[in-house]
Length: 201
Image (cartoon, rainbow, N blue to C red; front, side, top):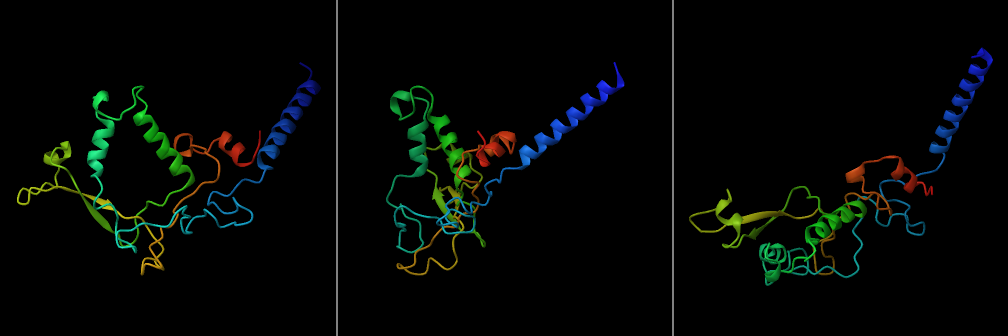
């Protein structure tokens, strides 16, 4: 092959490659800390800001203690909803119950996270019912009192809140990616997620 033709082909490839790099780097991407998703309120939903609520918090004492002391035990609810006997449970007849739970968790982790523990850590003890499989198998089983508790970590909160009914505890957003559902926990930050953040179609 003629040397001039080879040089022309190489020059074309180099220019094309440079052009692709310029096109990839040109769009301004949404920040991953949640700032400026809303131009009128740039700090809405941003990391280390107070979690926005649709309704006021409903603590047991109106300030910071966990509510639900008179509600059904969460272990009983889970057992009822997910037991293998479909006729006796609320499980999906199409086998979608578990899928919906995990998909919902992925969506929540994508757009908001307020469940990381604070410092110092706080725990609530959730009683394990005697009919639950974890009851006898648990290392936390106390034969003297015949009880088992599962520790539940309380979420991180704004230290300036939780002091009175007029200033109840407010959770803090610990991580937010942006307004797009990128499923980065599964696919990581690949070219497609960059395209979504840069509004490239």
